[in-house]
Image 1: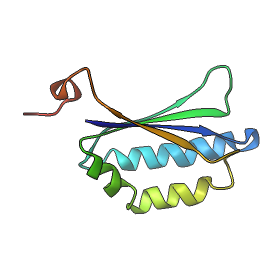
Image 2: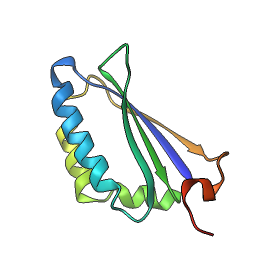
Image 3: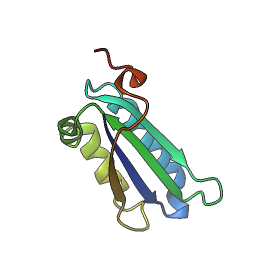
Image 4: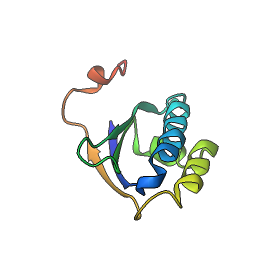
Amino acid sequence: MFIVHVSIKVKEEHIATFKEATIENAERSLNETGIARFDVIQQQDDLTEFLLVEVYYTPEDQLKHRETEHFKKWRATITDLIAEPYQFVKYDNVFPDELGWGVRA
């Protein structure tokens, strides 16, 4: 499993628009065969802070995701909504094993 955490700070006046665009991207992403999870979470004590938790089967699946029309649309839409460039960190899975993510051996 290949996991990416994307940290995004949104301009306060654009929170609702950002959420709408990001949820649309997440819903469409879940239809991709290479994605196990795509979570959108919002920080409780600072509503301008979001974290996307993207779980791919392989690093190549993440690259394929970045070429989809819905990702390109999302990235273009959020350009003026965010307060600063988003940051991402890539992780390797430790636990649960792949079966815990619903991957069939």
